[in-house]
Image (tube, rainbow, N blue to C red; front, side):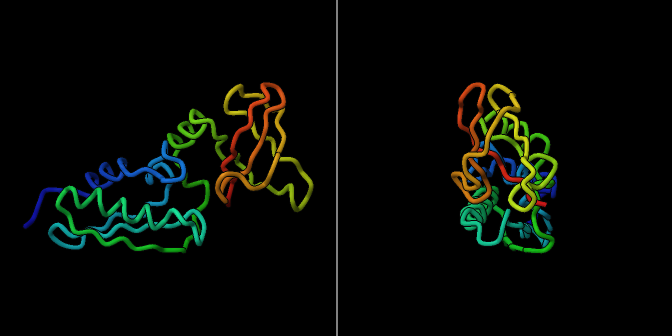
Length: 164
C-alpha cells in the first residue's frame, strides 16, 4: 500500500511528540530529530541524536515517535546516531521561547566555562528577566539543566545548560 504522505507530513506529525523531560518542547523543537528518510511505500526511517550519550529519555522518545507515526499507518525504523553530537544550537527559536515561557532559562550563546575559568555565566531569570541571578547547583532536575535563583524576585528556576 502506498500513501501520499510526504517527508513534510512526517515532520508535522513529529511536532506532536513531546520531550518527556520538558513536555512543552517537541522532539523537533529540541532538535533531536535529525533526518526523515523515506524507505519505500509506507516505510520511513527517523534518525535521532540524544542530547547527551546515555540520556534516559531517548528510549521513551523513540517509542513515542514510533507510536505517533504508526497511528498514521506507517512502518517506522528509528535510528539513534551519536555523530555529530547534539548541541544546544539545535534547539529551535520556537523551542527557546517555549522554554522561557515554561520557566526554564534557555541556553545562553556561550558554553558555561565558570567551572574551568571562574567566569560567571549570566543567566537571566525567565520570570522577571533580571540578570541578578546566582547558580545554586550545576545539577538541576535533569543532567542537562542547572539550578539557579533570581536574587530580585527570589524565584528558583532551571537553566538548560549550553552544550557546544
